[in-house]
Image (cartoon, rainbow, N blue to C red; front, side, top):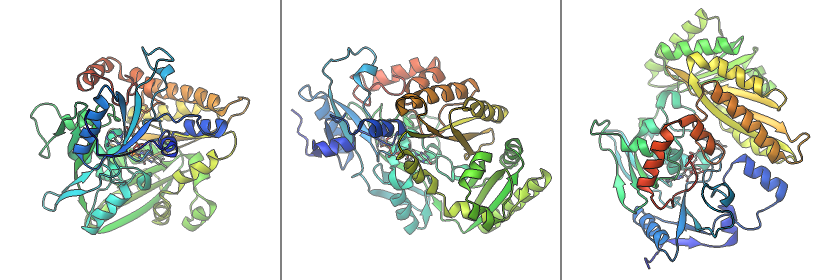
Length: 477
Ligand SMILES: Cc1cc2nc3c(=O)[nH]c(=O)nc-3n(C[C@H](O)[C@H](O)[C@H](O)COP(=O)(O)OP(=O)(O)OC[C@H]3O[C@@H](n4cnc5c(N)ncnc54)[C@H](O)[C@@H]3O)c2cc1C
């Protein structure tokens, strides 16, 4: 039997903690039914090196152990991606059949910086780094990664790679898949393999990008080579008001297509403007208007000033009202607040709250916004902001605040709401996730969105993980 020297635990408290991520549906279940009688995972490992990850894989493949493996970053996922799929929802597995051991492999002990190349501006960092700690370590060297998800205090580099995460400053610095040059990956057969070696290559398909977004179904990210940026010399904050969402979209499209690259660009729709901008904030910024727009530029002083000048000119032409820096400064100071307030709403009996983030090209985005808003009538309050922008389109981040209403269970109400909202977004031409990923919530939706490509993906999965041990029954598989 392969020996394992990796730290491990079967302590029931530990197993309960790892049986859940931050998927609001699971939190509603917990609120309604109390803690699970039995945790959904059987054991947890904490490897410290890629070799130890390979040891755990060998252990799991041993018939005496016969375990499924669930790669785990920090558990900040909001879709149930790390949670084993219940037997009843697995295709081809009779209910009641004895299940294989379900083993979580938490990579948080893998947090070394292996090398930092000042000349090429790259860093090799291990997958277990919590985002904020990695950022601080880079800041001490005079660099930034430029990746600032709202969950930066409670999410890991491995999780970012595995879910194709996007940070708040993505419009300038790109998403995690734009920052990665190469990864160290442990394949399901235990092979430790590195991808990539140059800023770009035409030596066949790009294996790094095949693995990005695989949500633990194809193996483990253990380290990544990422591009880094010098710390910005200057920052320019801006705030605007548009009369309507279409006017704000026209303005932001013009910014992107004229070539400005704000680090932050956000449109808050009327509900989000009125509910998330406090009256003190509006007063401090002397803000009046339906639709708030925030822009922040950062980089070298002369470049950001030139960009800001361009933005002011476009705003003037499109009659978007300029409120100076205060709104941008206020947003920056509170940029992580809202996400953490969501748990307060969920702690109220029968309240429901969840978010979803879709994306579409410019020709579809306005219709998408209108259709999803129309679908939500009668479901609760649907707030929306647009927060990641491209030459060709943008994303919309919806937040639904609702109540169980006549439903006996908030979970049942939640399921009906989400079925309808996702259906409406898909029919409007959107991709159903811009950056949160697939998880359990969107597992079957992936099949609908991917069409014929799901069969290709199934073949890739079978080739890499023929024993179907890695986060099985996820990603539409
Ligand atoms: C308050 C809040 C705000 C958020 N804001 C953002 C945001 O701004 N942008 C954004 O993109 N997301 C955001 N998220 C979602 C979440 O933080 C991201 O999906 C993040 O990338 C998950 O990282 P994690 O380390 O917590 O991964 P986990 O939740 O632990 O895992 C997520 C998935 O990745 C897989 N995985 C994790 N580590 C590895 C690894 N090393 N190798 C292989 N697979 C692995 C898991 O198996 C699972 O399928 C937010 C979440 C919360 C709770």
